[in-house]
Amino acid sequence: MAASMICTRVATAAARQLSGCQGGSSHAGFGAAAKVLGGNPGLFNRYVFQVQQRRNLSLHEYLSMQLLKDAGISVPYGLVAKTPEEAYNIAKQIGAKDLVVKAQVLAGGRGKGTFEGGLKGGVKIVFSPEEAREISSKMIGKKLYTKQTGEKGRICNQVFICERRYPRREYYFAITMERSFQGPVLIGSSQGGVNIEDVATENPDAIAKEPIDIVEGIKKEQAIRLAQKMGFPINLVDEAADNMIKIYNLFIKFDATMVEINPMVEDSTGIVMCMDAKINFDSNSAYRQQKIFDLQDWTQEDERDRDAAKADLSYIGLDGSIGCLVNGAGLAMATMDIIKLHGGTPANFLDVGGGATVQQVTQAFKLITSDKKVQAILVNIFGGIMRCDVIAQGIIMAVKDLDLKIPIVVRLQGTRVDDAKALITDSGLKILACDDLDEAAKMVVKLSEIVTLAKQAQVDVKFQLPI
Image 1 (tube, rainbow, N blue to C red):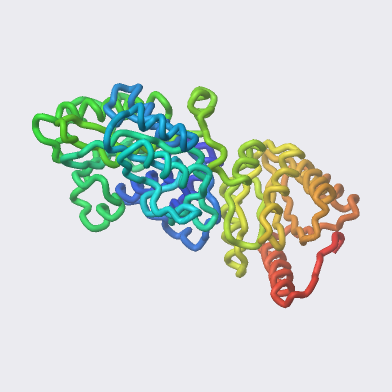
Image 2 (image 1 turned 90 degrees about the vertical axis):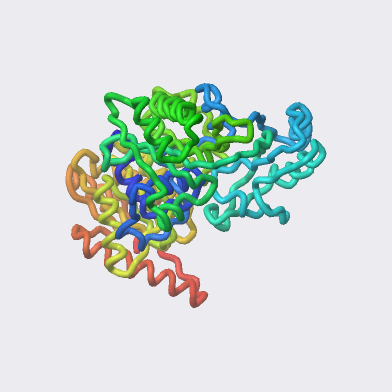
């Protein structure tokens, strides 16, 4: 995981872990590395995630490949095209007989995906500029559906056209942050180009790990040792080690949390080359990695993720029916647990943090209620840093501005709680207040069930506030 252990990021990381890393390719890579290291989603598997929260910035493949190239690492030559005609011109410019057209979407499993329109596979080999144009026309502007994208799919706005290389041998290489090693760890395997999670399960001895001292940095002998364990030929061990060192330096320079190369190959010309790249960047480094973060493709994000990022809120959409607005990562997780304990299903993870404004609280409600599955909302605030009266003002503003008709249960404790209760009482809205978290959870679950049953019976029930 990332080196910076800010509370909200711990929650987001934990919540990502709940998802089983479903959602996007780079996170799939992160999940793969975690499984290789013996990671386990653990007791939180009971939550089913709807969308993917991005604790780390993920870049498209062609951008990651350019970073590798800039670092002096051998990669296949290629260019990105945003139209079929651009794809045709790029294919002519590259001039090779065999080319690869890769859909640029932030989701794994492209090769086995399906585009709307029927095209099978997001990675295609073509043999002429005309074929590159034809295939690109079936990718660009279309949604690609894979196991990781779910039924929503991901829009493909561009394709990466690159030369086709012929590997003699394929290897797996990755760098990730790992708590158990207290820093970065290099991961390598002789079995590249395949699903590394399967290798970790079926043949764990085929995977080698090399922890790196974060202070001392990578040493040449460590890289050589890993290259040897990965099975590189003697004449290529030094070159492979040099590539690993360059990738590690890139990892540190850009505050990455994960770099995955699958496959790293010995190609037919006898050189070591990186054929693919997935890189995640620590979101806490945005202030000093602005050029990298300016490359983020927001079209690949869920609309609520975009809105949450703009409002500086930690939000993750789930598949439940009870919206949650909480301050603090641990309390948010506990709130989700207690809802589940009483038979309900949380619709989201949403941590407003300790310094939220009235506007942020209002935006939080907009995020929650934009999910049409939400039948009730539980607000659980412990005001140590966060002021309860600010939360109350935000709730009142949201109820009025959004004309909310669903039941809202509020549990407030801490700083200025009496002022908050007075504000809610004076508002005339009579939002359901409950000082006991257990009782609040029971109440919101029951209210959610009432709304759900009414809808199933096709009864037009609306909760008017005051209830």
